Every structure is written in structure tokens, then in C-alpha cells.
Length: 549
Image (cartoon, rainbow, N blue to C red; front, top):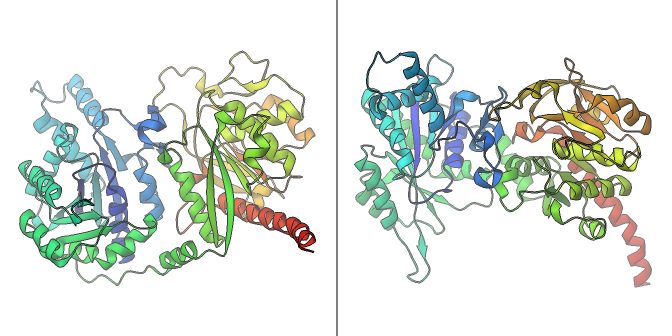
């Protein structure tokens, strides 16, 4: 049987439970243990698939097509393993399951209640990944903050599991905040004390406290926290703010979080953590030799988490190229033919991001045109690829009314159209083309150079696709469909062979980029941006020399 670690949060949200959970998992994995992480979210949505990115950040899609919380992206990026539908559970999914069972008569006429029926279903799912011998440790992150009404059933389920399972098989880590008051010039422990008291009142006592702080925790402060919160002194862990989330595993190793956890769980005879690749990645990230500026064209730029996987993929690819990637956020709603040169001329590369709906579409098309005509390295993802298709159709093929039926259902030139399988869909949640699908790559294409193979699998989340009725016109004019789904003939990749670097993909490559395996398109895109920047510098140099003379 696996052992179970539960991670809860107190005082405030957004403290980084997902990063702490992923960092501990990385350390335990580096010691040779088989580890997985799951996230339990307290909202009533079945999944985040129908939620606005402003509400919840990006919707992360797993290999098996589950629309999940963005923390699963952190889990995969840190552990370099795939997660699945079982790794993310919401209150909505729990209640849906229990209500369906009630309708089927599974409870034999009993009154269905939060305790025991809801909590039993939560416990079943908490233990699900630990059955069998696949994992030694299952880390469960409980979303929300202790004290929230929504979190109560999950905390109660943890209490019951602590009682039901052997003492050495469960561990509770509570992430909390030690705020620094500038006026008093001191760190305050009272919010943490109240948070632990509230958790204890609900029947769960933490074994380890991980304390987020801006300032160093003094030995005296650690003793105070340990005494007032009733934990061992060694179990008070400092989680100082880090320059990058990828430093956190090393910070937690320095604080001996993995050793303390294994001691409580009575895990012995593990090897020392093997983190040489991780440290090498951090060295390249901290000490880059080059710098490029990439424009990120999107419509949800006010919330950084809306494009979380893309931003992390740039970090991975930048380190691989020993290059600092500076992201310039450019809101597509404010791009026009008049100001496009002003907004984009300083860039070394342009990425047009995914999204839904008509807002900001014309600005994206204008930006794509600029990149195509000026040799600026271009990368389009999902909607970004579709914008490249529409731009090419309008300005090269002369199809002035070219559009997507998503934005203009009555367009006379639907170069992007609703997928055949989507025509009968009326319920929106979980009904897109989701998850991993194969793609066959054309020989001698840019895509083959990037991937180094002609057969790949990538993750999808879309309803609209390239309209193959126009494919011959596009290819005759120079835009090549270099990747297709072998079963459906769906165009997966488009590129312009005569352009320095111009590629668009229907899938979401950012979802599979990890520290140890950076996504190939991002790596080659940054490489192309670096070459573009160097060429730009060479062009300017003679002019500067002439002026100096």
C-alpha cells in the first residue's frame, strides 16, 4: 500500500501549495521513490473546462483528455510524468457521482448525507491512485483555504483517513503565511496560530508547517511557532520567496522537508537525491549568455496564469538555449494596421496564443501579417494557427471574406470550420476534441527538423479546424500542411518553407514541456529568435560604426 501526504493551506490563497507539493514530490522522486500528486478542488464545477481564464487561469489538459486545474501542469513539469483524470477531483464531480448513485438506488433507501456518503466518495478517490504497487507515495493537495465552507468535507475526509490508516501511512503538511509588518518591523505568527487552531478544530492536526515568508525565520521565531502550534521544532519549515519556482525543491531540500516527511512515514534506506540535471537547468536559467524578446499576443494578459504553460515552456526552452527570454505582453484588441510596426518592430519573435471568441481576433491577424511579411519568427498555437490561416487566405490567396465560423458563422469563405464531430454537440463541458492524438509529419519539413521524427503525439483542446476544402489552394500558394492526423486527415501543423521560421499548430505543445524535456517547437523557436536578434544586431553595427566615424 502507498503512503499518503496531504497538503493544506491557511491564512490566504495563492501561497503556492501546488509548488510545495510538487517540490516535495521531486525530492522524494529523486531519492528513488515512485510518487504521484493529485489535486482536490472545492468548487462545484465538474472541471475548469467551462471557466473563464480570468476566473481560474489556464485549463490544463492531460493525456487522457481531462480538463484540469493548472497545478497539474506544475506536477508534470516537476516530475516529468503524465497525470490523468484521476489526479484532479472537484466538489462538483464528487456530488455528481453520489447523486448518480442515489438515483440508481445504490444506497438502498438510506438518507444521503455529507457524512458518510460525500466523505466516503472523497476518501475513495483519495486512495484510488495508491492502490496496487505503482506508487510508493501519493501527495494530495487540498484546494482553497482552511476555514472555507467549501473545504470542510475534504478536511473531514482527511481526518477520517488519519484515523482509519496506520499512523505511519499518513502525513499532513500545512502551508501558511508569516506576514511581515513594515510598521512594526517584525514577522507576525498570529495568523499561522489561528490557521492551525482552525484546522485542529476540524479534527486534523498538521505534522509539518511550511511557512511562507519574506524574511528569514529566526531560531526564536521557529521555537515560538513550534510551541504555539504544537509541532516539533524540526517540523517548522521556512519557505522564503524564490527568484523562480524551480529553486523551491532545492530550498525545501536545504530545510530537510523530504527527510522530516520520510521520518514521520517511517521510510528508510533511500538514496541521496539525484538532482544534477535540475541543478544544471537552474545554472543555465540563472546565468544566460543571450537574451531575446518575444511578443506574446493574447486576450487574457491581465492574468499571468491564463498562459501559465506557455510561459513555463519559454523558461524551459530559454534554458536549453542558454538564453533569457523576455516576454512582452501585447493585447490583441489594441493592434491595428496603423500601430502594428510600432508595437512589434522591437521583437525577436512573435507567439500568437490560444483562446476562444471573436474579441481581439482582427488584431491577431494584423500581427501575423507583420510577422509573415517582415521575416519575424512566428509561432501560432491553436487559435494562433487559425489566425495565420485566415491571414494567409485574405492577403495571399485574395479571399477577402476568409474567416472562422466560430467568429463569423455566415462567412462565405470558411477556411476554419467546426469539426464534423462537433456539429451535434449541445452540452459544452468536456465535449471538445481533448487529449492526446497522433500526428504524421511531412518529410523534409520544418516540423520534421524540429521533432527529429515523423510520428508524434500531442494534446488538443479545440472545436474548430482547418477546412481541407481549401488545402490545395494554400499549398499551391506556399503554405504547407506539414502535419496531419493519420486517421481523420485533420491538419495539425502549417508552415511557410520560404520564411525564416513560421509555424502554426492546432494542438497545445506547451502542455508537454518539462524541465527535463523542453518542448521541441519552443526550443527551435527561441533558437530562431536568437538568430534573428543576432542578424538585427549585425545590421545595426555598421550604421553605428559609421555614425561614430
